Image (cartoon, rainbow, N blue to C red; front, side):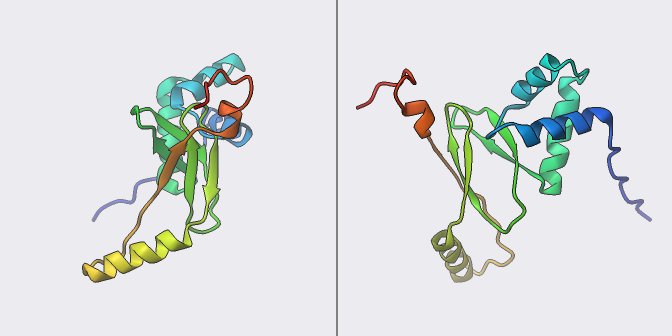
Length: 141
């Protein structure tokens, strides 16, 4: 008989990671979150930050997005139905978006190819208005 895996303990360090994720705007790397926690005086190791983020992703409470350069960003995510994200590749700002046309297309393609129980995620990367606006240092066209 296989024993169920116990739920992870709710530790002070995990609570600090969750509290920080609720405060920051947009997505952040594990290293960025660790640095912010250390600046607050929290005694949290980088390994604990990574483990907590993975636990949140596995539970569906957070999303992870990999930037085109390979860096992985994390953010708390709404549980209000299926959605996709616009992600700024400069600052990590994230906007949740609905994609009904994408949902219909995914269902049609899956059905046409005999697939069931299909899941998908879409991350659209660009540069947000704040990072391209006046004073941002980004040259336009």
